[in-house]
View 1 (tube, rainbow, N blue to C red):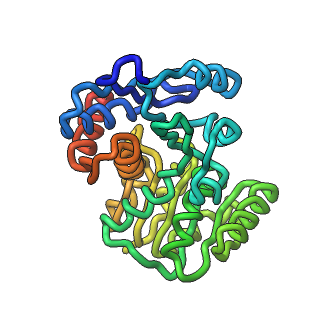
View 2 (view 1 turned 135 degrees about the vertical axis):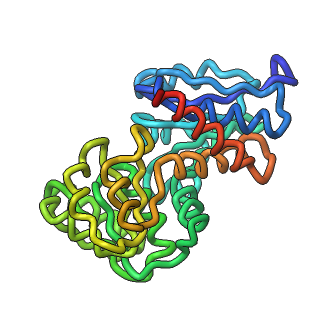
Amino acid sequence: MSPDPGRRRAAVLGSPIGHSLSPVLHRAAYAELGLGEWTYDRFEIDEAGLPGFFAGLDGTWAGFSLTMPLKRAVIPLLDEVSDTAASVEAVNTVVLAEDGRRLGDNTDIPGIGAALRERGVEKVGSAAVLGAGATASSALAALARICTGEVTAYVRSEARAAEMRQWGERLGVAVTTADWSRAAEAFTAPLVVATTPAGATDALAAAVPDRPGTLFDVLYEPWPTPLAAAWTARGGAVLSGLDLLVHQAVLQVEQMTGRTPGPLAAMRAAGESALAARAR
């Protein structure tokens, strides 16, 4: 029995966590859905602290959003993991069922696909991925659903290259790899997904060709990145990390609250407003 049957709680967990926009997005969703008893917070928690945090939960908790470094560390603490999350060994969503079970999912993968569909990108003949971290594996999983041909990953080391090829085999997508020194070659692809940290692609901005395809740059702050600005200036379509963040958060809200569809427009507006305030 919940200590307070009317109260429902959710939060984002990770370290560092102070920059997270998730509270802004989820609280906007609750307001739009009329869920006045729902709250959403953030907690600074690392891998060592996660088991103890979960052990102290009561029945008011509905679920959690997870960021680094918890997306893999949480898996042994769960009762069930979705096929989507298992495919990349990464959980970014935990829903606490009424019977107490902890259910893990990954909304980054369908979130990438939903963001692309919103911009009219439903199928591509080939694609390129810049980078090889956790987000890159989620990007590969999303591309496995829409890319009919080869995906080229541009990476900085042979070890990373081997990892991306292994992910490709596991996810059923044809992956070739190339050294980061050739990253400008990625821009000939109809879809480019940049998964690298801030600043990593700045030097590539000058190499954006005339009439580029679609760029999905997973960063959202600061925005636009030099690469995204150059892409837009040359007439290409650009998606940002906010597009990904909003779409994956909509899916989290739906899973945690049971209310569908999630309020995409209200959540996006809240995110844009928060980012504009930070930039001032």
